[in-house]
Length: 326
Image (spheres, rainbow, N blue to C red):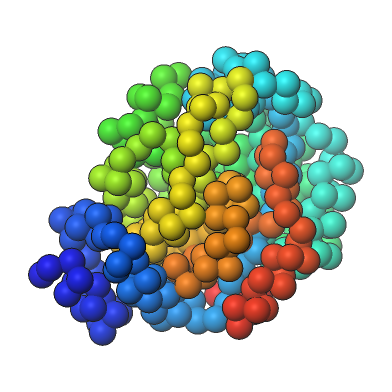
């Protein structure tokens, strides 16, 4: 099929799954067909998730001095960015952060730490916080704690942590340009371990790090075939002192096209928009739902500021959507 014909077929048949060659063809559509592509993506969002979006929030529970050399990361010990550096937060602080976000309307709360992985004492502290939050809130608790092994993963699961987050960051073919201190297969192994243990799994990446459209499709196809139900998409926020400091931002329309492609390629997954959406999408943020997104990370990110939670809740309501879990 020609690309325009393919998009019309996607609109008329929401169950149609695109092949790799079709996904690559869709990645090349120009602005003349972009809003048709968004329509196909929105139909798939509504088919799978209805009019419900979820809101997740995170706490930067341990910051800086990461041994990994990820080119985008302000917390890498390889970069001099002036980021705050502190050890794992105490239990009371972590609990209060979760409680605050639950009261604000978040449905998921992620405990995020810098570094390759946590030690046993740190895992124990996280488990105690999770146990208390599960008793006193309705939050779904997610961990983003680096590489995972089965023993520590089981301890986290037993504490009540229901989800694990671990991004691949980019396509395998682009990974060596982003990170050299661990392998792509190590990241995939952590995702698989989390899924095998019974966690709900979030795995996504960052767009705008010098990858081409074919590599964006490659990442989407990889994530489609990995276990897990949620793909978090970030857009690069260039940070002074990192190797990505001078990267230009994606245009708003290119960013929305990325969202639509991921939705069309992986229609069964939830697509949540995370870091970088404010500076990349700008006034186009309300269109992210029409492009296929059904989740938002709200509040602040790891080392960059988000926007007002009230503004995000208003945006959801104005799109005719409701907050909840499916």
